[in-house]
Image (cartoon, rainbow, N blue to C red; front, top):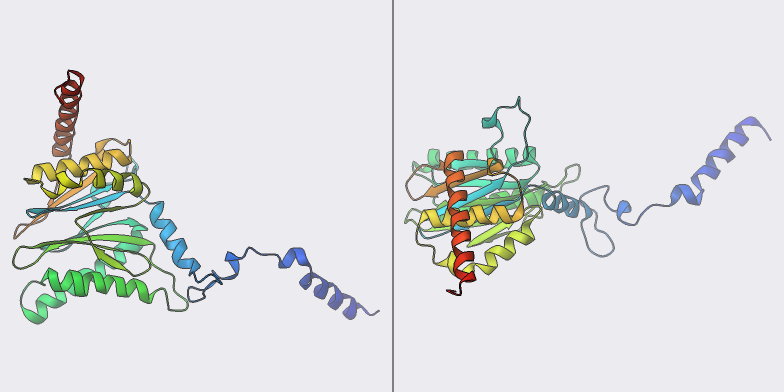
Length: 280
């Protein structure tokens, strides 16, 4: 046998080696985002959703008076500037967004949403109506943008879920969530991230109290409680923003968050004492 034939037989045997050809079923269908698996799944979209489930927890709460967005921050280096690590983005004067997932992907989505808001102001000389923008443009725009990335060859889905809150021109508040798959829904209160199930249980348990929140302070306390159920981190790792009708977005200071935490502790101690003595 000549040397060329010997090399060819060796290469052919390696190609036919069963150990080399063995590959997990999911790996055969995750090489491109537009390939379905036999059970009807888009594997790369599921990978993007897994990235969201492993991300920091975020919470959104919508009341008649305000919209509260809260986010859990990861620990930063002592040399890093605090102002460069906010997880709550201002989209327009009356719209804000927070996210769970890849920060770089969220930055792209926030930038595109800001461009849409400014384009509306430029074209119509008025702020964008959230009933139209959040429901039919922003969230649909973000959802459509995400959904396009689940169909285009050579791209990957956005590994981020967004909570978008804003007010209509008549003062009606809205809270939406978009997922990596491109779907979106409107919520009264919602959460996403690594401890979303735990926070969702808290929100569901306190649904009656949340639906009748009397003021902004009570709404902020619910968001802080929800974040505390999700993580044992210090409150210095919380970002909270308050959005009110015809008022600029307020990023809650750390002193105020600590004050809310002290109020929650006092209320918890008082509730425990009353229950101990049979007053509840």
